[in-house]
Length: 370
Figure (cartoon, rainbow, N blue to C red):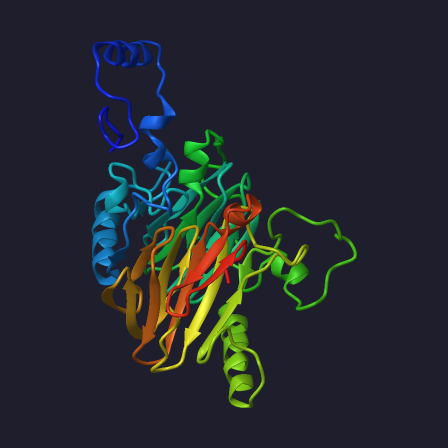
């Protein structure tokens, strides 16, 4: 709420002050002294709220949408955004991040289009769909992260008699509110309906530590279309094995984590979103922390709980939860707990707003996510 005349630090009420404020309004002006608490609070006060979406409910809703809603040109995608209750009426998960469950029925094709917004897909279960990115068919399977950087044509085709669902993540809110977006229709189907086991981008780029000499320039987004589960799983498994052997490898005891990276720069896979994967040993509880910037998580396997601003919520495979900026959060693993995370960290860090606070030890990391 804005400050009012007579409040501490505000001018005393008077007819002259009323006329002054009326002139402000008439001339589309707003004095800073009545808005300081709103515009420059002592710490972030997000409108978005911590929230959990249950995968079982999302799947049921998506299945029903599959029976009722076409996927062809016009509607384009059968994608259902997860709308943060604190950001109504928008379908934003956070002020910068959009997350949706997308459903593609048996033998369906979602036509090609492209947009300035960056996108990815993460698969928690199922297979049989190929996403075609700039003419390159990329297999989608459980545990895979699929990338669609901004302004790349993309469509999807299901080659099986079974439907498939996955989550989409985009920087739609950021692009929309900054007036950055463009959109263009492409092919009525997809430009290549092949279904290869390995995409062309993987054949060129998915070799650890090896960069093709034919393409050495840094690219703003990853040229690799898929980050496969078997590599993610192996990296996390080895971190925990090294911890068992007494070597430093995990971010904290019992907590392995990786960041998906752009092979041309070593940085984030997309210029506006960071993608990570976390594995907690059974019984592990992470340190409570607050971070500038927001994130969305999906439980990939296992069960446990997330504690958000003191509220403990149990989560199981598929469930999604959102952590707005400066929310105090920690994770608890009942059994081994795997989680996929995406965040707006590249935006926050590029603009030098990052900071992390660990309240249990009163440690502040200004200029760092800790």
